Image 1 (cartoon, rainbow, N blue to C red):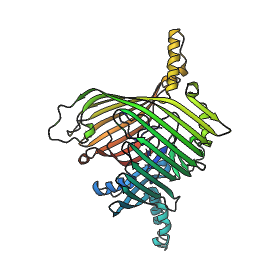
Image 2: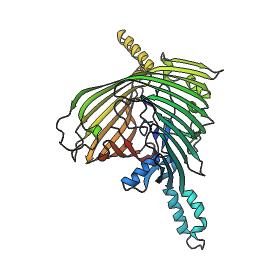
Image 3: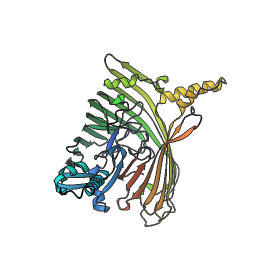
Length: 464
């Protein structure tokens, strides 16, 4: 699964486990299934909650109904939010979600049976329950740096609840979250509900270069179930009941090979201040991640995969249901941009390519074997080539007119074992971005995933 929805690819992000944006539920987010050796990443502070996004669309973009599409949730839906400020630091939200296919079905049924004398109001309560989902939420600003968010969605239809406590320290962000159930998405794009998921997160505040770290603790309880009722998929072992602790540390370095600040229009604000310079840049990230598991989820470390051929540290005790794992990771991003995003037409063309090495030990072992094969004039093994092939993600953005630009992001798989397609595009996301010039760096994004049959309109701040 492409990491889209978690965030659009941007230079320096690396390959991080960030929350996914998803139209599958009213809350609008899902967590990626924890997977070794994927490291945890830099915290970028709390995202704009879905109710606040909807309220922004209603107030400032003349959009009383915000659409989403999800095959897992029955198709097209429209959303509306009512935000009430009870006090200066306390707000309350009511959310409404209307399932358009169900609404059309009810209307067709009523017109088909219009000869019957039964009034529409007779089954009004039942029809409203079928076509509409309700949610409520409240956010309390305890201090300027501390917030508490309580949310309840799909009331009387499953009751999805979430509580999030967030606190900003001078150089770290602390987040404590409880979800019942917790929604996760695996690498195939399949959603999973965990009856109860508790997590605590401490992360350094992201910077352009330098040392970063991330500590994470997660406790899952209950048997995971496939969201949508499809029981044919195999449950990810990482979601089984148990406790997981992770720690990641990384060093990031960004280099501008070329940057041009001239030729800008004077006294003309760019549509996005983060996209105002033509440049060619490189960003490298090198780090290490260590994780420990206690409970049924510890069996994940015992599963044989390609990392078993590496020198990564791993330990598994079946009797004590304990496991430990440690490995290296790396990421290199190349970005090229032409244009200042100030003019009305074709003033922004941007391309990015990110190369992720998820297992540094596997890459080093493969590179060592290839070097030995080359030195002794031996035919290299295909599996060795696969070990050194990075995961590739490419992105292209082009201004269409004014603040509107087109963006496509794709994951590219390099598989020497395939005789038909050595290089293939595994997943693609298409999007239209509307830069909100008055906010400096913000955009409304409408994206669509053909493979996963999902579409969503969302609001993003401070992302290039």
